Amino acid sequence: MKKIKNSYVKLILWMLVGGIIGFIGGFIGGMIELERVESAFNNAFDFTIENIILFQIAMFIMVVIVILVNYMSVKKLVNSENENDSDVGEISDTIERKQTYALACSSSNYILSFIVFGIAIDERNPLIIGSVIVFLISIIFSTFMEVALVKQVKKSNPMKKGDPSDLNFENKWIESCDEAEKLIIYQAAYKTFVIMKHLFLGTLLLVFISKTAFGTGNLPIVMVGLLWLVMILSYSYYGSKLQKKKINV
Image (tube, rainbow, N blue to C red; front, top):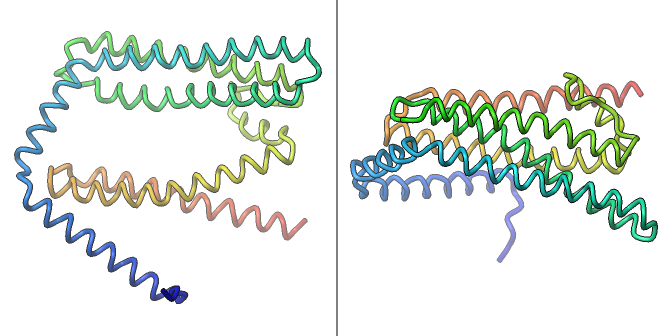
């Protein structure tokens, strides 16, 4: 089969595919009894809110386990690294990987805690005070553990700079990274940017459908659209700024 090389033809074909998928989705949606779907969704949501504190506690326990297991494992590996010079490279890679897991888990806990807490703030939640307490404990734990993890990284790698409590911590941290680490960060950031572009598009399509099917209103559409716009404009601004800096150099 001959490969299509014309960009405009490709775009038209993708638009046709999207239109067909949208038509099929709309046709299937019309066949489904939305009242039953909405009723099932509301029942599931009511059950979730009434038991939300259990979800909060379970999530907090999992976060504590993952972070502390990796944190303590790194402490043992650092001692092992000091005692055994023959496997320094392999041990160092393991330390870095475990520290990355712990930091990612801590950062994820912030986001998930706010999401779950936002759901918990509801009159149907019989233990709303308990939800507030669990939320605060979870956020405080992640905050202190992030500081501890960064200090642990700096201890194993004295070249790293920056205080997690400073507003410009990220800038100082990146400046203290070597070229290989910076390349990994930049490549990961670009791949994340590409993923988020597609994710925002898919999310916008979902909120369009939810507006017509469940009456969720315009706010989700506006919020998702604004976040997507901010991401694109930020990328363009900093890309242009770095390009000018490169030319001047």
